[in-house]
Length: 541
Image 1 (cartoon, rainbow, N blue to C red):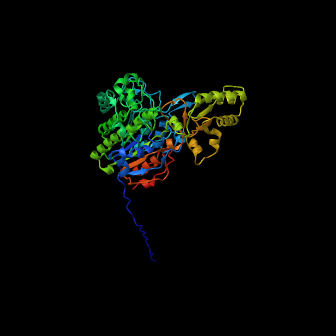
Image 2: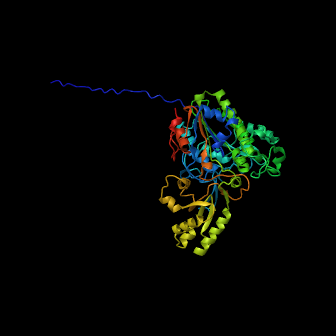
Image 3: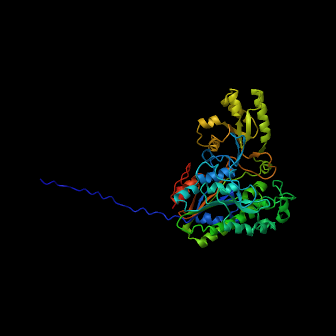
């Protein structure tokens, strides 16, 4: 008997999935202390080839926000590149109190490493304090280390944190009497030849041996208040905060080469390093995507000294626009548009000078942190008959003395609550929340949610407090600062341009961790290990 064998062949339609071409080079640009309104206030004076090129030819996320506090440089750069917030990546401030060692920890300090490029200790740095991978780390993993990653900035933390743990190199500026770009033994044994050549040329002298004059006639700076005003600081041995600033006459009394950091020419020498890095490392010249992370630090130094309404800050951004235009022009001449992906954002904004706000009948003030510490200790001494309950007060946090509390069988939760209640009686403080509450409750939105996302259970303190809007720590008699969860510190630009990017704009609320998630989608690689962001789909073609 013959058996009939029936073969069933199921044919499933196959649709070829076209793999997107990867960009040859990603250029990530962070501008230190760039409020979103610097994009709009100075718009008419920008050229067509700098900021406007990114806005008009790329995608503008007009409602990009930081979703944690404190809004400082270290946490900002870490959050952009890890795609998460300090509660996960651990960079809770630029410098924080180490409650286990009872000392101060700088975000990129590393006593194991030594300086490459100078004889100072400025290179004893690494990314080891960063507890998450970065999008640049993930690019190194995805390319099996064949894609290059370079981080550059005037500030060490602005170069190191974006470059991540697996970077080929990070370079930052050693001021004082050095005037050199340096690195760390974490990355290399000696500076590559192209960096040595940049140091030998030392263009800092070209700028520091002249004057900082306005780019345009000073009467044209109509977006700024009068050049001579009581809200701005001065350089050492400078009588008035007015143009021109005679840098040659000032450099000796202002730490020599460090003076350039607080001028727009700090941006210019970084631009020159960026172009030298692309050439020297031959970035974007093979099939594996390379990444250049550039952080312009000088706007932060200028902003701290002069404030957001100053002629100096406006001139700094007009000059930065020219520096960006030069970078973009170089990229256009050497690459096709779909070979380069650019994004530009900021690590935080800044509040207007509080005294300027006060004089204009707007809410603002100065908070005396030293007085708070003294008054808090006195309050707790009356209640608990001891002055050893407070270990440290810094970064809007109170650290309690856990060992003393445990040894004396005191109730930590009750002391936290007592501290929080006292803080709320102090003029200038709007909110206080205990670590116990942050661990037990999930705040989904609002200021306390921002505080929670900035709270790291291992590294942060026992009680966090928030100042009123417009208030900053006392000591800034002129100029300004940042760090708050308010819009002037949290609302920053985010511009995309080039490979895989749509042309357009959106007012949709997005948050800083979304940047790395979007980069991962555009590059078709894994998101960073602790990423909490989501791809901004409107950006992607």
